[in-house]
Length: 319
Image (cartoon, rainbow, N blue to C red; front, side, top):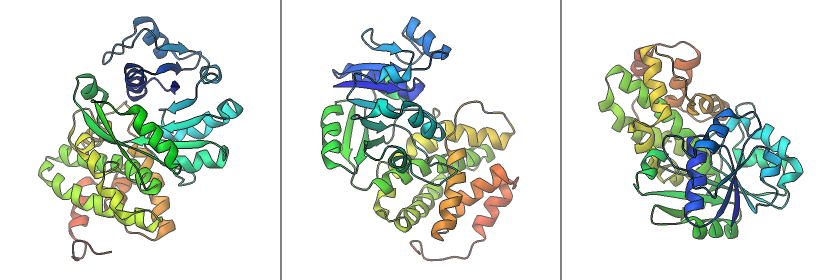
């Protein structure tokens, strides 16, 4: 397969490396002023992986997709709309694969909905699930999921991308897969809050109640509630709630400690979008609401936790 990967951050870089290693012809698309990508091209290393020599960098995103059948996008989720507008007709006839986890803040739309709005004729899939580039690069295998509205595309990607390092599963619920993948980053921030307060023992309860909360939202949006308990969400908790490599967990811990965190934590954006969906669907999202209020409304973390404990008791799977 001829594949272009747009985005040379830690995840995009690993995807380009991985897809090349399993036998694909891979190009990395970057902007002319992307100095980090230029250094990567020159040194072939980003400190985690050593990029194969046959993976070429093209410093023009439109040019980079010209000869590829598949275009993988791995950039901050809030930048997807502008990138699609920039690429425009250069994407015609391609298959888009979104390797990013988020929801558009302004509209509350899933990322495939943003694609459909701008390029309705494009075939689009999502690739999500647990794992960090550092762990994959060390040879630690994991399981992930690919989902699409087109089962033929899903099957082609699962069959073509599977290896001894990554076992892919067929997604069957695009709504649940996307919402679950995006929302797990918010739960990761909540886990960081607990770590920062010295309440890490509460992570078990956080995982159980967080998954149930997101299951309700998925159901209200028309998806399958069971997706919240699959690889897109609950299956990704170890990598998000516990791992030292989790940006979202680290962001939450740093926030509680009053320390500045410079790296991208998608959950800090996703939680804003979830507040839109909460109002739209009339679904209770107590954990996500607490995270939003702590980050953006100045609520005290300990007080917010106390308020969660004061909520009226119900049966565990109420609602």
